[in-house]
Image 1 (cartoon, rainbow, N blue to C red):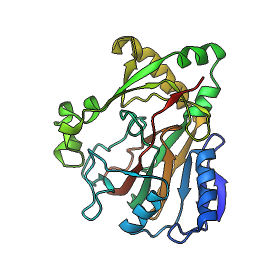
Image 2 (image 1 turned 180 degrees about the horizontal axis):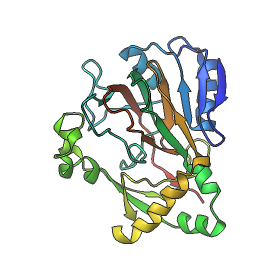
Image 3 (image 1 turned 45 degrees about the vertical axis):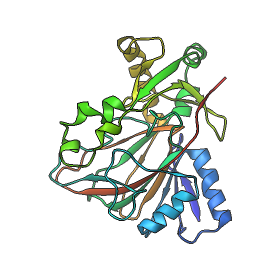
Image 4 (image 1 turned 90 degrees about the horizontal axis):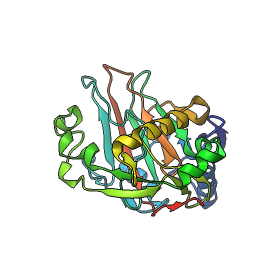
Length: 278
């Protein structure tokens, strides 16, 4: 098994391992890399649905996705699909999966089934590196704040007219009832490291502030966190398995492959409630 960093801030590519046959020592090395680098990319896998589920269960309990269409055989596996004739992708803005839950997701595990000949990459940014590079004054300000997150505006009734809802990629809008308040700067549950915890898709605003008042600072945080020095880029091929830590990164899917199909299978792992970094 070989491990190499993807960028200075985050990410690691792992080769020379078959996750279907790895032992406890190999899994421990992968887990340590995940906690250290926040994004792991494991190449050249040949996973059935059962294999994908088995790998996910080594990390924790599986979250059954409320809004994405599941595969025909495994309710634990969500389908992330853009057909060749569809214009908009899902997840095209910077976001953090399940931040609207009271106990947000530990991580997401995305497996590539079909990819375009070029494009369709995923960008990740380190919310720890972004926090650590802030001034002491900004750090103190953000540590004093909590933020309001919700699924209602992203997956609820207001989205029924969007392309992704009309073509069946997203649905079940009646289930979009999740609201949560989290610290703006969290302590990572495993490492204890600080990380910014707001995102464009699901964060409405700061507790005690209006949404309008919140937007300038939220945009400033996103612009800072997504600077190139805090990011890495994952390019996909069939058989690529990528897992990211939702407590430590944001991500976005690049929509630059018009006319081609992109099919991914995703499993999300349940996490825990998040504590503030003191």
